[in-house]
Length: 476
Image 1 (cartoon, one colour):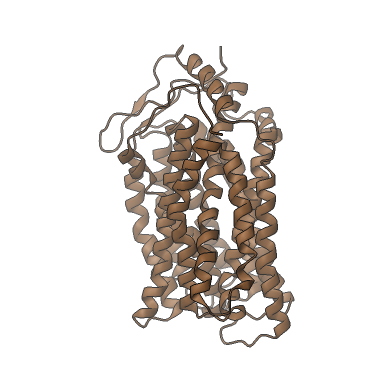
Image 2 (tube, rainbow, N blue to C red):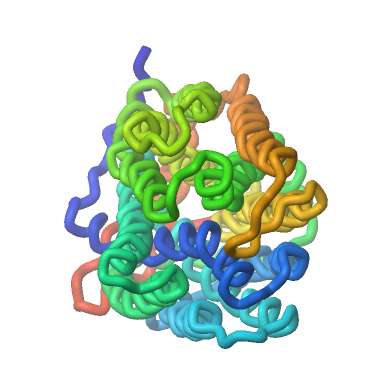
């Protein structure tokens, strides 16, 4: 049964959406490189212990927890001649570039202080870019189904960045470069991509909403957000759907090379297939969501992903041919996790604005990103020390016992399945569907019509702004 809205939806020009989505390319590349390759690079080639790596990631994520809410509050109140989110994009780019250089081209002998310090800088830059990009996308596409389409394009662009990063080690191996040089090449690629993507995204026209009266930060509104059932459910879903694939990513190279008998190059090929599937999986998920609703689509993809992951151990060791369909299916389904959560957050943000009379969309995305950051911290901060305690040695050339390999296999399979299924279960009984959101939009649009037009901030190319919303505050 299809989801039908009761208002005519405004479609954004596809050229505008593609230009806006360009920032997702380096963010997608970074996500894969940092989750899959960078920790292993520190352990294998720079001699950093698993305990130090896991501890550094966990400490940084815990410190980073206070950053996003502060950024969200400030972003919601930001008004500059450059716009709101555009100004933040131009700030976050250089910060991320500095940290990328320091981490991907780190010298030998680095310790926990160096690692923690530059990881903090890296996550500050990515928080600014990721949070601002998501909130900007939500205001760019205010309608229920259009949000699915826009976030689908953003997800597909992120997959393209991930594909590029995965191809680099394969190419590096083909031309005779070692694994360490391949990781460094990934860093150079991301470093060169960031400024181009930031400038392309900054060309998107932006329309500023008038600031609502009252203090910039009201503690009672913050508490109400934390206790709002729909936001709490999305928070838990985000945690689970980050923890599951993040757990898998952290152990991926160890599992496929040491437990399943693949070479590093073959493992990279399978991972590439997993990620490439997202190019089709993301827009397909977005399309299905316009027909059946976001929450139903998300629950279906989490179930299909978990069922497919159960078959990984049935694949003959070292068989790329048999491994391809399993990785293709898992990647296809996983591509919809984050985009559905982000699109649903935008819908809840409209409901919050209707209830509270103030726009808090950046803060809402910031609070939800806490779930992703906590989960990402534990994905590495728990799995790496756990393997060490179970007797697994990640050092290059180490010979592990059968018991250690068996522990690696159990950890790789069980963790993702449990967390992904939990993430889908968080959406059982979800009520904010297309019909309910259309009612919310009618109230907001009626209220906005009472206000004078919001100031227009042109794109860097001088193009006219795209109307999104024209006001902010409690509905009259």
